[in-house]
Each structure stands twice: as structure tokens, then as C-alpha cells.
Amino acid sequence: MHTGSRHSMDFDPDSQDSAELPEDRAQHWVACVQKVAEQQDTAAFRELFNHFSPMVKSFAYKVPSLDHPDTFAEELLQETMLKVWTKAASFDPKLASPSTWIFTIARNMRIDLLRKQARHVVNTVSLYQDDEDGEMDLEDIWFEDENSDVFNLLAQQRSRRQIHESLKHLPSEQTEVLAKFIWKTNPMPKSPLNCGCRLEP
Amino acid sequence: MVKYHPDARFLTDYAAGSLPSSQALCVATHLHYCAGCRLRVGELTELGAELFMQQRPATIAAGEFDRLLKRVAAQPAAGVKPGPAANDHSVTILPRALYKLTNGNTERLKWQRVGRKFRYSSLNVGDSTRETTLLDIKAGGKVPQHRHQGDEITVIIKGSFSDQEGKYGVGDFIVRTRGEIHQPVASQDQDCLCLTTLDAPIVMSNWFMRFGMKLLNRRHSRPGKAA
Image (cartoon, rainbow over all chains, first blue to last red; front, side):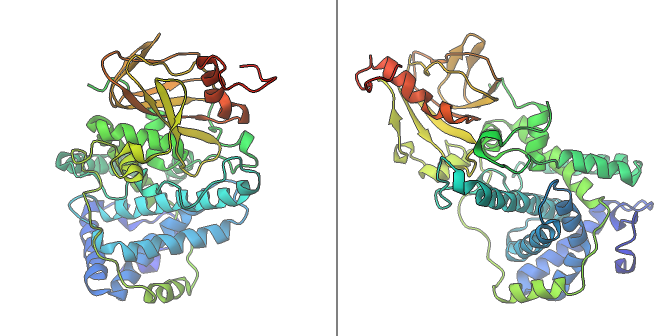
């Protein structure tokens, strides 16, 4: 079992030096998700939790300028894993790998939580009277269900393998930097006038 | 044939979840029409997932799982979502977000008319810093001339229009930066429906009305207000 070394700095069972590819381990996580969906199996859910929640939390901490990073990280973790539980039945292994599926849930939840926070800040001075009920569903903008194009899935698996191979050779600090760069968010709005500026020129 | 696509920057930010909702809606709308960009977004999402899994793991406090289990006990695992496949691009004529918003019928929206050939409807994507609007331009009609402060993105859903830079059709993702002035004209043979988003300094929320008054020869102008 890998749980003993879960929190060591550079060890990641999914990218160890052996020839084992992420998709080999993926079968195990697929089985766990299916057990959750079909039997509400909490032992399988715990395995998923142990494997994926350190990544969800790490992802949460990459949001810059949070007022309460620990609170945000906890909330993102709880809401993401809760969604994994409730959406387990809709996970289709023919469309995506478990890590991609969970990553997109975490990604979309992050957007959702940040939007809720922004609404709190902006509401008192908003010109547009943000109507939560009238708001477009984030799931219609960022689709959680993967593409149904079959050739797309094969291409995805191929590119995942290539990405995995090339990232394996980067020191972990560099992948951390790359991740921070890709996951930069817009600064939290202070007023309607100066929000939403892209960080890059 | 879709000719104009979001660039790598837009696609990467979309796949990473770093794009503001209004701009992301434009990308998502374009994806409805463009398999090539869907493939690219798929690859970028795989990159995101791989980076996600290769992060330095954060520590999880004892008891976090138990707290989660308590919440889980309060609800059963949900069944499979019914309805059309999320990305079944052939099923609906409208891109998914707009289809859901209008139940397939754009007449359900609240439209503001400006002149005979132009009307618009504001959309709520939870981003009060931007105007996100559907534009409905009758054949041969013009979008009122305007300036904008930041990027303006337009995606064509039905019909086509041209401006001094080119001619655009269904699915095209068109970006105009600050300072660019342009006046799109819908083609003569059919009406044009498009989605547009732009940064919203307060003054811009009135530009439709301002030019609308001009178009209507100040029939509705208020005393002391110049067009």
C-alpha cells in the first residue's frame, strides 16, 4: 500500500520510476468509483479520499491572495469530494480517466467557490444586482462530463501518456511553478471598476 | 467552416479554469461548433490533470475524512443525470448554456430593442465586471458603433456579419482589443445572432441607449441629454 509514503515530498505513486503508467493504476480508481456508485462503499471512498485529497488541497493553496487559505482549502476539499460521492454514478471510464474526472470537479468547484466569494465582496456596490437565481450554471460553461467524441478519448490517453513522460523528467519544483502559472486566477475584485483584469499584459 | 478560433492563451486559461466566466462562456460557445478546439481543450485538460497529480501533496488533518463521511451520510449517491448527453453537439442548435437558458427558444429572453434592426439581451453569468450580451441583428442591420475598454469577444451563433477586418460566420470567435473601433454589419440575406462580452466600465452600460437615441433621431431623448 502506498498510504505510508503519501505525504513524502516528491513521491507520487502515479509517476514512479517503474514502467507503470497512470492508466494502469487508473483501473484501481475506476473500480473504487464504481463501488461508491453501486454500493455506497465507504471503504472505497476512503481510498479515493486518501489518494486524491492531498492534490485537491494543494490545488486550493495555489490560489493567490486568499484571505483565509486554510478555510478555503478545507471547503474546496470537502465540496469536491462530496461531489465525487454524489456524481460517482455518472462517471464513465470510457470517457475519461479518474484523475481527469476528479481534477475537473476540483477545477470547477474552485471557480464556483471563488465566484461565491466575489459575490460577497461586490454585492454591496454592484450595479448589476447579481441575481443568484438568474445566474448561468457554471456546469454549462465548464463541462464536467467529458467529450463524447470517441477519437478524442484515444487522443486524450495518448497525450496524457506523453505529458506524463515529459513531466517525469522535470524536477518537482518546476512542475509546481508550471502549475502555479497555469492556475493563476484573476485578483479578487475590490470594486466593480477595477476587477477582472487579466494578470498578463 | 469556422475560421476564427480562441488562441492558445484563451484555451489554456479555459482548461485551467482561470478564465472569467463571461469569456469562458464565449469559449464554450465556440467549442460547440469546433471539434479541433474541443480536442485541444481535451489535451490541455489532460495537462492540467497531470500537473494536478504531480503536485506536492498537502497534508490532510486527521478527522477530515470523518467530517466528510458525516455529510455523505446525509445524502445518498445520486443517480445518473437524465437528459441529452452533455456535449451532444448535434442535438441542439444552440450551444448548451444558451439552450438551457432559453429552453431552445430565444424569444423567451428579455430583449431591449434599439432601432428597427437591432436588439440585445443581457445575460447573467455571475460576473458583474463584464457585460455579457446576446445580440440579434436583422439582415443588413448594424451594431451601433462603440468603443470598449478591454477585450471584446464575439462568437457568432447564427448568420454572419462583416466589418473592416473581415467576414465572420457561425462559430467564429472574434477578439477586438481596447481602442479598436468597428461597426459590424449583418449579411443581407439572413439575421445574425451572436454572443458578446466586454469589460464594463460604468459608462459603457449606456452605449446601446446612447446610439439607439441617435438611430431613432432623438425621438426619445431627454431634455439636456446629448446623444
